[in-house]
Amino acid sequence: QVQLEESGGGLVQAGGSLKLSCAASGRPFSNYHMGWFRQAPGKERELVATKMWIGGSTYYADSVKGRFTISRDNAKNAVNLQMNSLKPEDTAVYYCAARIRTGRLTDPEYDYWGQGTQVTVSS
Image (cartoon, rainbow, N blue to C red):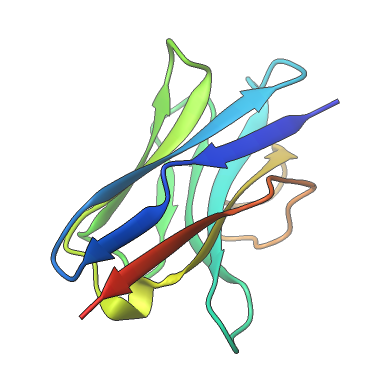
């Protein structure tokens, strides 16, 4: 069974950086899309970044382009989200997600989800 476990969230001041990690286990992910989503208080879940498990194709929401980077950590079988130049509006619970590769990286539907990790950015 697919298991996704996020870590790395915390409290940071505006302009700072955090790196989130999503440990993926349960099966090979060579045919999967991986995604990071976030949900802020009072707002709906938002697609942040996606990446093919194998390959360099990525997608970023306009709100994070140039600041966030999604990547795969081969040694740890994980997907990371490096977040730089953080803003208070980045405050949210961040979720890792996975799906068997179908469609486009911009498609928001995913099948497997982690429990989330809180990111709080202070002014």
